[in-house]
Amino acid sequence: MSGRARLVVFVLGAAGLAVAFVFALGGMPPFGGSEHPYRDLAVAAALRHVTPNVVSSVNFDQRALDTLGEETILLGSVIGAAALLRLVGHEKERPERAGGRLPDAIGLGCYLLLPVTLLIGLDVVAHGHLTPGGGFQGGVVLATGLHLLYLAGRYRSLERLRPLAWYEFGEGASATAFVGVGLAGLAAGGSFLANVLPLGSFRELLSAGTVPVLNIVVGCAVATGAVVLLAQFLEQAIRITGGAGPGSSG
Amino acid sequence: MQVYAYAVAGWLALAGALGIARSHNLVHAVVALSVVQSGTYVLLLSVGYQWEAAAPVFASGVPVTTPVVDPVVQAMTLTDIVVSATVTALLLALTIQIEKRFGTVDPDELRKLKG
Image (cartoon, rainbow over all chains, first blue to last red):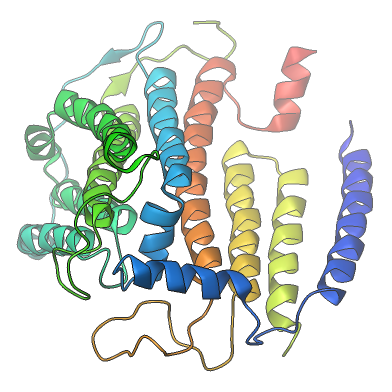
């Protein structure tokens, strides 16, 4: 299809979508109104399970099964990227070249920020059921915090702090742990991912039953998954050399 | 103001789709796909919005009777963001592999190579 024909198809499709979208909006309750039936049900259910962060309650208690699906998508994408970005054909790893010089202030800043960032990541994961945050957000903070070492110009020290095999294992183990918590709910509470742990008292760190447990499991999964993903791309950019040239089917 | 948030959502989705349709670089197409997905975030959050309502987190100092915005669409947006990030990573890995194999990331060039 030529560029012009493709544009015509796009304009027709976009116009159809725009018209359908406007009609759909016409039948909606007014923007910003107080009519939110799902909100009322979700907030009541969260308060019943002593979870101040209603979004966490939806993700890890009321609809934890959906989060298991999301977790599986994450696992699948990590496996897919690792399979796609493995060494092929004539590629081989090259030793690290001596990097360019980096202003000392940047290196020092990275080393100072590394423990602070990791601490914030752990805090965001641990308080996911109380304050905004949770396993997904905290996991990303942890994984990207680790890469401050790369910013500091020390790819080798990043590799030392990041034994990739362990992170790959961690990714699989946390996905399994999520299913394990679900099966524990099935055994003790009669339904998969039922919230069977003691609920504790409102706004306490140890409360909300399985929500903080699943937050920690997901935090591990996201942190290890993101580290493995970023490692594949960093390897491509830094360590791999002599790829199959254009046209050759390597 | 009523329709402004929905208009932004529709605009993001269509502008991103236009970016994919006119793309001459697969990396650009992947970024355009992220723009489309941003449109879905704005749409979801607009659906759950309520004027002068708080965030759906009853932290200390926020009584549980406070009106809050819809947490269900916020949870869906969070899921959406995570899935979007992982899909972006997978698509970029595919792009790297295509570049290695064919030496180009222009969809039109790739079609010519296939003949």
